Length: 375
Image (tube, rainbow, N blue to C red; front, side, top):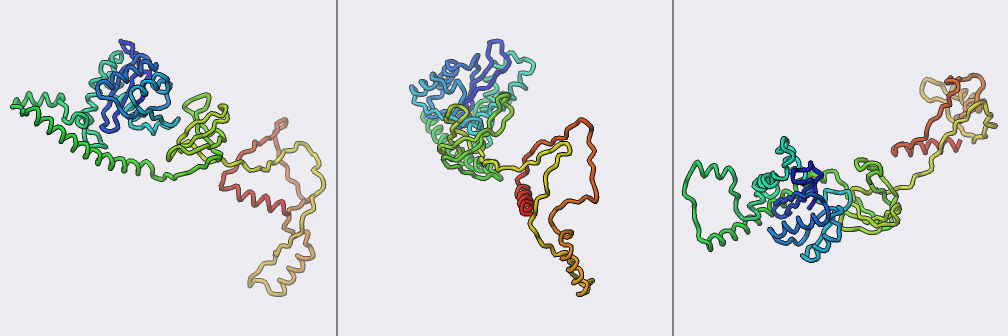
């Protein structure tokens, strides 16, 4: 169950619609509403229940109207179990969310020139959806609910053209045939639905990797920013308290006074504490940086090998290298034989903001820094 809107206000003052879809038959229902208050939603829901019966479970998001005390009392009186989706994860109620998109597209295209009367065309549009076979079940929602094909416009046209006699049955035989047909349709629909769900699950989970978190672990949560609901960023870290089901986790929101909130696995990622980063400092002017640091002595074999040098030449190269070890040192030093000038604009201070290194470069840079510190 879900709400769509606000739409353009109709001539009768309707701006919203309460949408319900039966998960067993895919049978859709929609009721136009003037407001989405808890009272309006409860009245529309009771109106639908009076025609099709009381459901055992109702799946909704965590909208204000669905979380109200009025709906909770109605569920309690009728013995309905309320199931809620996790926040910011509409895929949990994907069936009704997808139908919302279909219904809004149909309304927009069908009543393009008569938008003030969109609520009057709601029932005809629903009938058009109900009589079309559903891809997952292989049957129309109307046939799965009533056990027969609906008599639509094409059927009326065919009867007019054919003008043939109609088959008649007595009441007992009709009930027996209907019961048998409903049983057969239910079995075939379940088989088709399981196959379709398996195919859709494989396509949706291609490349997916199951992650797990333990109580007490720190995670980041992908949440909308305070400035816009269309923009989201990783916020946290927050502590995981427990696992809820297979793909949901309860998290303590320290920024909301320790409130507990359930999030889907797709909105969570492991938080790793940032390592200390060494930064360079720009020094302006001709400030003396102090004496040169004494470095550790290291030997470097610069004598090249190969057949182009004779043994005596290799010996001479090694002797020169040992005699002038300070010149052939692998350690960085300082020279006054040449100078390098960097020209900058007068009065402009050159600054470079620190930035994070990519993960694949951190180990390389860390190795180079350690090698420089050892020199």
